[in-house]
Image 1 (tube, helix red, strand yellow):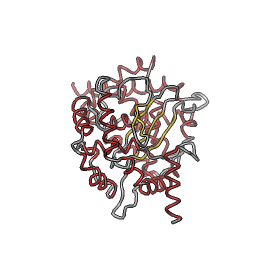
Image 2: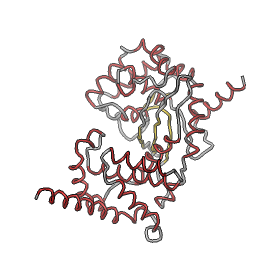
Image 3: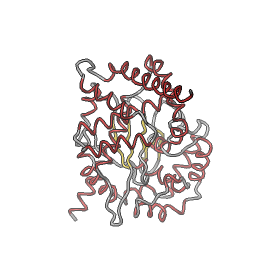
Length: 360
């Protein structure tokens, strides 16, 4: 009885937003709703069974609504607007479940992105009908024990290795955005980084983490998940813009040419995204070094990035380590951008030289 009460209290704290830490993992009904809809609509990325009992319950309890209008519209929007993967999660953050209804939050737009303004009212009406007729709110609360256990294990296994103060130390400036961590209990092995900006509120950056359990129903979170968190939130500090964007364009386009097919498969089709991803991944490796990860783990992280065609990763990590050891000269990451420009220019120049030699 005491255990049940404790689990309920933990669940209530997460739902109500009461936070004992700066960043505390949470469960969001909106995320579970949209994940379930995507699953019912046959989205491959939302149809894994790693959640075992939980995903089985979605199929058995909500499965009879597979032909509901909201589910059919999800199928149409996937084909029409590319509503898939992280876009499903982005849509979840644009709505609010209120127990008996769903409202659109004020994002400054009249539409639920990526759906058109004309189709938004019809989809909201269908979504509300699904929400009420399927009694999704009851389904959500009936699984409080699943959510509470997942959050507890995540705190014990992941948050213990996540140093949120590192960002300010490493980048030399505190984050201006609000960081949020959400577990997507129906999302299987997928992790998503999405954000939202509500009217009169600071921008929020969400790391929506995966959820898998073993045969005994025990959540499978580990130290590796902390690295994923570090990665997602680093994106807030590596935006390429202004004069830096102009300075990096030439080398960025060259790197895109060298890696076009592999980067496109990873959804990194634009040169700027490739460079931002490079900086995020290199910074994450610096985090591992700063936090005493053993040599095998650090080497494995570098080799993994090289395998994903970020072949310049060893040199880029060295460059960021130079930044870390010369903080008097570079008090903040913003002051280091000229060196980053120089690094990519030199890397491309060397590759071009090697290509020219090979052609002779």
